[in-house]
Image (cartoon, rainbow over all chains, first blue to last red; front, side):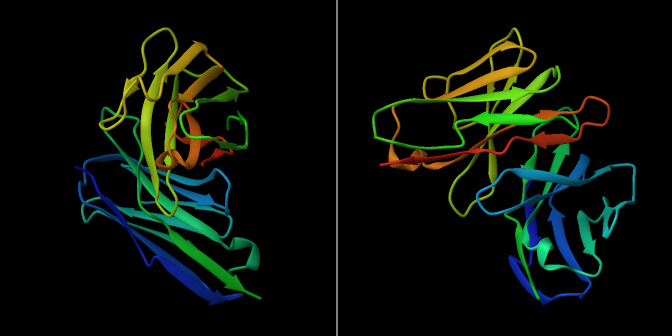
Length: 112
Length: 114
C-alpha cells in the first residue's frame, strides 16, 4: 500500500528566504507526482506535475524534483513571499490507476 | 486546465439528513473523482465516476452511504446520506486532463453535521 509522507508538517520562514519542502513515498512504482497548494478552507490548486520519466519541473519561483528510485520529491520555493503562505500537498498516482494518494501536507507560513 | 465549480460551497446539516453536492466542469471529461478531507487530515478518494457506468468505490466507502450520479460528461453529484457528525468534512471533486494526467480540483464543499 502506497504511503506518502511530508516533512516538515509545518514551516515558518521570513520573507525572501528560499525553502525546500520534502515528500517521500514508499512504493517507487509511481506514474506521476503532483504538488498542490491549499489555502485555508479552500480547494486545491495544482502547482506542478512530474511524470515518472522526468527529473524536475519548473514554474516561476517553484521547482519540483523527483528521484523515483529513492522515493523522494522536493519542492523548492525561491524568494518566498507572504502570499506563498498555504498548505502544500504532495500526491502520487501509480500505473493503472488515476487515484491520487496524498501526504498530509506542509503548512507554510511566510512572515513579512 | 479545467474550471470546476461545486454547489453548495458550505452547509450545516442535522444528523440523519442527506445532502447532495453538485460538481460542474467547463469541458467534457471521462472521469470525475470525489475526495473527502476530514478535519486536520489529508484527502482520501471516495469513488471514481465514469459517465454511463456505476461509480467505483474505494475501500471503506459504500454506495448506500455515498451514492453518485454521472448523467453526462460535465456533471456529477455526490450524496452524503443519513449524516452523522463524523461526516463533517470538506468534499472535493476533481477531473483528470487526459493529455498528461494532471488532476484539477473544485473549490470544495465544507459540510458540518450537528
